[in-house]
Image 1: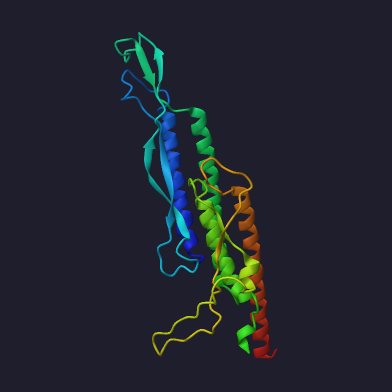
Image 2 (image 1 turned 60 degrees about the vertical axis):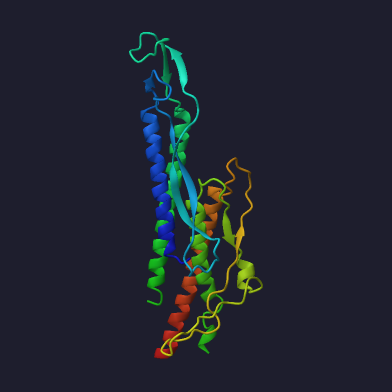
Length: 141
Length: 129
């Protein structure tokens, strides 16, 4: 792995954190949505991260060095939705109950803060690598 | 005579570059479950007491220039011990990584400065004025 690989690694991290921020925003937007059918109500979505392995044969650090992060997929939370008795709600089922989505806004806010910090740190890594490379290129001048 | 003009700083610079990518990879995987943070142990690698012998560059064509036996010192990746256990098995602690990153940055620039001053010394000697 050379200095140039830092751009790929940090770029993959920025992409992963952006996906995480997108799912957080989607969850927050739908946190109050209700439905009469528990299988139809919105469930919180979370991305699954996985470290990418370094496949290049030119890696000096061995085959078990990883090279960035990727999003395997987005899974829906299995927490059961909250039930509340609202017979006047047009979406209530025949017993008068509505199901609210299982999104916890506090948990989503902490996810957002964590994604924000990770994003800033990886931007910092890219800037530092760029500065060091520029200085190395102008070595001897 | 010119094999050793930059001394320890030539392999040190390459090693700092490698360490930069390892640390950047740690920071990229700060939220990946079960990811273990890695790092390069400098003292051991530079003293040449660990890992295999340095890899020479193989020459496949007579027109290629073969490098000296130095090459890139083989660096073994070690695992970092976390200060606190975490629920998802991830051992990356962002402040630790940021501190190591900043330190590596400074050492890289220090090696670069030394090499630059050696180069200007050589140019001074060559030009004679």
